[in-house]
Image (cartoon, rainbow, N blue to C red; front, side, top):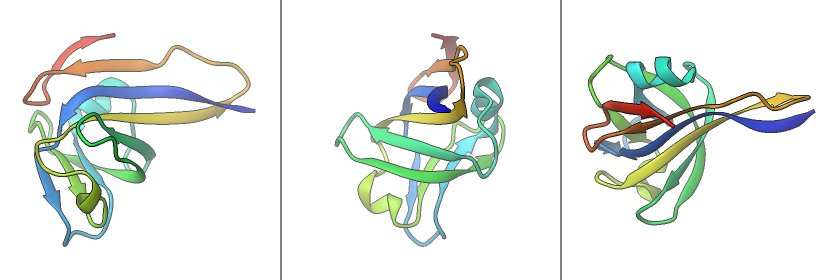
Length: 113
């Protein structure tokens, strides 16, 4: 088994950072649906702004809300206004085509890449 990229949200903007929440990243349900990222799934979040990288799990935000919120300790590393890439991976024997999306500055879907 190898680990392959299965989903990516490219150039999202962090809309909130809540250090008082108990862990995770909150992602607009529409973006989750378009990429196949699921509730509780482990993701890698990379900041294009600061270079910070972290792993956490996903919880959904209301559909079409544009929400990308860093929660808990992650909010110390990646802050409101930063541009991020969110990636999810899968274990498989062969790679399949990942679902990669580009979003606008409001975290609304623009296109598949």
